[in-house]
Length: 605
Ligand SMILES: Cc1cc2nc3c(=O)[nH]c(=O)nc-3n(C[C@H](O)[C@H](O)[C@H](O)COP(=O)(O)OP(=O)(O)OC[C@H]3O[C@@H](n4cnc5c(N)ncnc54)[C@H](O)[C@@H]3O)c2cc1C
Image (tube, rainbow, N blue to C red; front, top):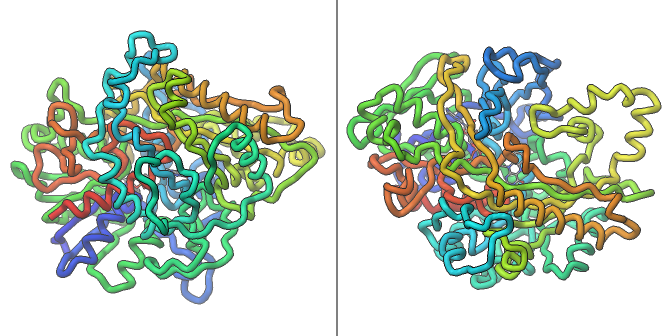
């Protein structure tokens, strides 16, 4: 087995795969991707026409209910269901506490997916660009005099920095990601980038016809005076030349929270890694390999230590090392490496220095929305994609001024939400990922006729409109190591996080807009019919959007990564997952993570 490569990349998801794609296609370049999870093959990759490795419910299908038995946790003794591509909570938990000291509790929040392709295997594929102002929220707010809602001292702005790259310089990488990943959608109506319109033609494939239930959301957005566009989704609707995938008839409503057995959803495995390997480039992907720590010599990372699928310790060397484990696990890996060598790696990454930014400004998204049941109609949501219509109206400066908000977000309808009875039951009454199934399995009325009445009323009838907005960055929101050991004897990641009060203002404002959209779009709906809400008050809920913790910036004094996403203090160590973001952006983050990874790939010599 080879143990020396030009580039070693840790993690095969949104942040890792684009770097592998670019470098493996360069002449005489050898690239290794180490991935902790398994390689799940699509149906066409199987010999003899067997079914794919994906199961019908990737997130919660690994057998019967279990019990949390991690000592010292407030939720020890609670039941949970495990997934076959996430760690078992007892084996490798994330620990969560809020800033008021509630906790610690064990949680699966903050894991995306542990599989080749990472979170892009399970994601809904919503691939929005961020707004232009999302890149420069410090500058944008510096000249505003509008009072911020519920924040008279403008405390929310205390830790905000601009991204060290302007939106206009980022556009080519958005275009590259949109073309190479394989995304359908429309650009017309995407007002957020009005200073820098999409180039014509744009890189999108043509969307499929919207699900009829989504038309109520579109009507509502239009009635509210908002421009709409077809939500960009990372699912191919046509032949995709860059990855060699053929168009087909995806039942993509099954895709959000599921792996796609047919490969139409543009996970980084089917869109970037697999085609590169098939073309014969020098790219090796080693699944089931968990990197335990990095070793350095001065300003150079010299060794990557990992355990292979049999648990054996192994070492590889790379001229360059790229960390893309998804933000929490990347911070954890840096901290574990620092603890392993406090005076070498630890000093270079300023692990124990006061004022160090490592692990700080951890971010997710402010999110929530509104939902209504369409009376006397049932829709087959399984035949459509995750979302059909979106609007940028709430990211516009005029909207932010009118409502006294520091930053805004995107709004889109969820079509595939609860598209199967299993997903309706799984999410019934749940408030976070760990309580999935709790509402259903604890409700004795959902038996016999009760379950039939419930399905008759709720299945295929619900329409939701969601928002995804910037979370206020706070120094105190952070990732640390927790003494609880995982199954390998390594300290766990401790997520310490809370909302800023102004996050509450952002969320209640945008949830009210979602309610207005449904009220305007669904004939006969009254406010009493619509439920609206957000995750404000539920700090543990991270939306699977795991960002920050190693933000990039122009000076070492304010960041962990330089503008090229190279770790200050190292010559050959880069981070390309969501950890680089100093602010979380007003939209789902994966397209931006991919675009940034393509940008960084061009900067690695
Ligand atoms: C159900 C679901 C729906 C989502 N929907 C959307 C959506 O519609 N739109 C959107 O923009 N985003 C969505 N997301 C979020 C999206 O998946 C993430 O933003 C994205 O995958 C993050 O990219 P990343 O590179 O930071 O991490 P990932 O893509 O998660 O990749 C990290 C990889 O690193 C591996 N890894 C971790 N530690 C190690 C280690 N020590 N050694 C080796 N490998 C390691 C992991 O196994 C993983 O494969 C969704 C996520 C989920 C789970």
